[in-house]
Image (cartoon, rainbow, N blue to C red; front, top):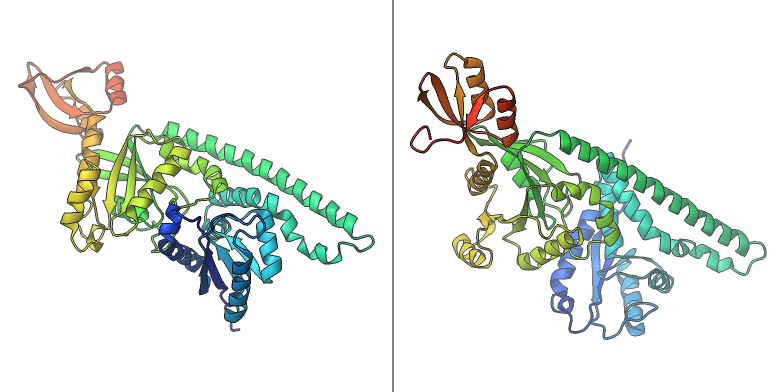
Length: 432
């Protein structure tokens, strides 16, 4: 049996920034990003319309003349969906749908739709469903527009309103249930974190499609990590341990990508996932160096981090995709002047991640101080343990005992002391 592929939505894009605003200056770039979002959602762009508005029309956002122009454009290109780059109120969405005779979405609703198709784990699906219901609740009346045609009918107005209230109550109950489930998720994550070994932890944050998943796959060598050149390719937080050499490891977590005008409900619902970033020792702010709007992208990420109260976390700026630049050296000079200490990476060369690994190694060493462990020379079991869990820098005889200089986590040092092993700081001039 031949399976028929459903036809793609024929989408008309609308941008209506305020006159004199920053959005008005970058309307072309914003429409390009909206185009990519529609492509990710599976739609086809068949037309665009822009208007720089001085005042917002409370009924339709854009002016009456532009609404008529939009209606003619939709009819001309046989559009099946209109997507606004700006947020629409429930009343504006309903009014526009009635006038245009076709479905209308705003940017937030489009992003929510993409998230719903990209959510793979049960946790991500819970988070997306919560955000969708919170977005839907004030817009339920718009979904009952079929009642407006028979609003005066005998016996129909009452049941319609009753059903609307029933739906609202069901959605509120479902929202409460989802919040409880996500609280359980947060508690479960906290339990997992408390049971992990004490490694340096780093969280990848950044604009969507900055290459975070590619970096995690390159650092960890885990080829099962999904990578795709699309916005919001992955939503689920992934954590992998990365071997830095010399018995040094770091725990790196990937997080959901951010984007301009990210729906507030979505940020709120993903707090459980983003708590991985909140508990990390270090945030790695991944930026696509090849994107012309990389500075705006960094500002957007900083704004979302501030909304999550993560703006004061230790952060390392990492400029990725250096291979896609015409003059990487010139860019590095400019970026270092703006962001001292920044790291530059690419996953397209075998040595492209070495600068990042070296920086992580230095930070991992800082939380594993060098100590001197004094052992019986015949205690091969304990010596093997030190080689296995620590970074042995050297060893020498100190009287009748073997002095081993080794990098260890403080908790391992305390464990050795509790077991009766002599541990102290290295003496200058002895084992390194």
